Length: 128
Image: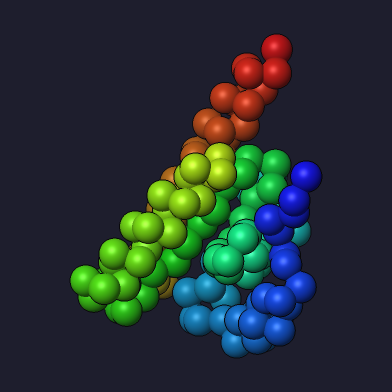
């Protein structure tokens, strides 16, 4: 089986992204690191050719934070293609705007927790 996670060729870029997070990434990470939501998340995980902001391996959940650049048509098209490719691999992707993280952290955390619990229930029910 070919591995799709944390390919060596992305190691330097992953490290750079972890060491230089955006304000929103830094804020969210403070609340989800150490399984504070009940689920383990990783920062700047590479999956195939992509590096995702946050990844929960138990749920195959990717959390992406979108800043201003994601409002441009070309970037929007790249995001869409990236999502479709990751979904084909079995991942669920959710997106939050940076401004929502900064201004509405409680709502974002509530939403993220509900999504995680829902995905966890689906996986549990599939198992039994």
